[in-house]
Length: 150
Image 1 (cartoon, rainbow, N blue to C red):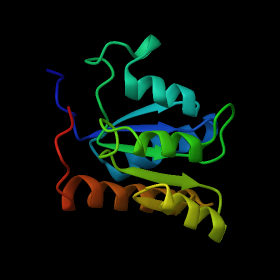
Image 2 (cartoon, rainbow, N blue to C red; image 1 turned 120 degrees about the vertical axis):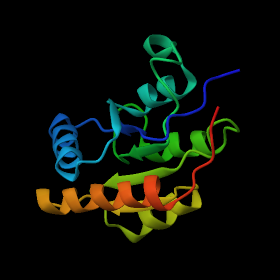
Image 3 (spheres, rainbow, N blue to C red; image 1 turned 180 degrees about the vertical axis):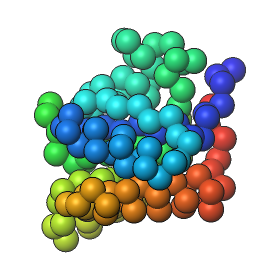
Image 4 (cartoon, one colour; image 1 turned 180 degrees about the horizontal axis):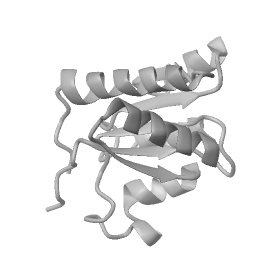
């Protein structure tokens, strides 16, 4: 039997190192007790979720309680990986929040059609990002009852 998810594990698929650093700093600013892990593209996210390659040790790469997903990444875009996550029985219950620079209505519509739990346009200012991270933490890890994932 697989170990259950540690709900405070967040995996963020983000190819921009500067954005990774800003999210990490925003999370620290919120004083949110989360285990934030980064993957740099959609293929690496799938490797993490399916425990393949360098993520084959499930104890070292626990199932996340939340996935933060950028839409526009190299190799495979966020829409493709979102479709794969939501079409996979063992992954579909993991909440996926799309955190992207897009504000296009077509992106919002397509992302929800694919099964995303939330769509958030990345704030331009650091303080806005801190507020988004604070709200995400309060909602997903304090207000919401998440299922235990194995």
